[in-house]
Image (cartoon, rainbow, N blue to C red; front, side):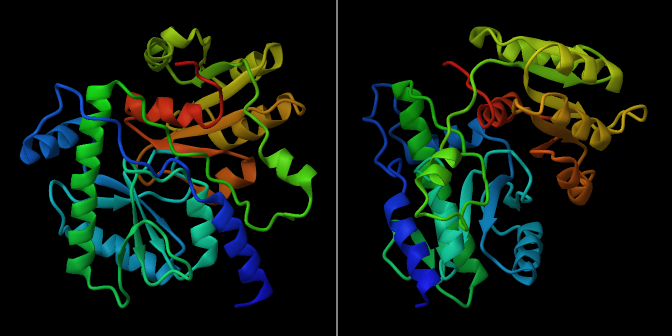
Amino acid sequence: MTKEDKQLAWKMAFALPSSHKKAAPIGKDYPSNHAARYTLAMSANSFPFAVRVIGFKPQEIEIFDASFAVGHGKGSGYFRLEEDNLQDPDLYIVDAEDLRALVELSDLRPSDVRPVLLVGEPVIPLPYARVERPIRWQRLFEALDELIEKRADTLARLEASDIVSVPERRRRGRVDIDLSDPAEYQRLRTDLPPGGAVLVVDRTAAFRDHVAELLVRQQIEVLWARGEVEAEGACARQRVAVALINTSMDEVDAYRLCRSIKTARPHERTAVILLVNRGGYDMERARAAGADGYLTKPVGGHHLVSALKKFMRLPR
């Protein structure tokens, strides 16, 4: 093992998630029948199940996509979340032989609600399900189905116990930091800034009203802008924590507006989330403009709130 690999393994060992715990005690309304628990999970989630794939080579990712498209699992199968997609995954598939992938995983709060399947042999013991290389796809899908059933069990317990599940942490490249510099580490661990409104840039106010309804209990102000000039003005007048931009408006260059919002208040952090049609995300332009990620339309309320929690404080 190289010196760099040892440093990565050290960081991973100290960063293993504390959220990998048993679920809360079973409540009195907890379904005792296994089929009922599985049905509960099915009814509580959008299908197919969303998978975050971490650490695999591009050729391997293409094989995952093709295998998911064929569909071997229960329900409606699985699909891979692209790297910039801010939707919370239902589970992770991780290359266990890639230390950087394991370090990234350790920072994402995997749990029984968001379980992990390792592919290959990890360099240190980890408390996750695993399949061997070379991948036998039937076995991989069987392992995924088993994790989904366990996840159903956990979701039922959480519902019966009235416990709120934690959204996936914001994914950032943190592997190459200097671990010997406390100031750099503290900078990366800084809490989300308090306050700030949510800005919706859309042709009509309908989606703004929907977002406002989702956030009414948190008393978060939700603004609406019909175009670039209105959006830039809103960001200049007050602090905006998150801007949601509908990329389907011909009269708005979403990527140019994103860059403008990012520079409106250079000393304040404003996240920009692009709302795109399936296949309509230009990753190169989005990253060049400073976008923080995207969500695919139509956006479910749960996925939207989870995405907002990555960038702003939302009281329970």
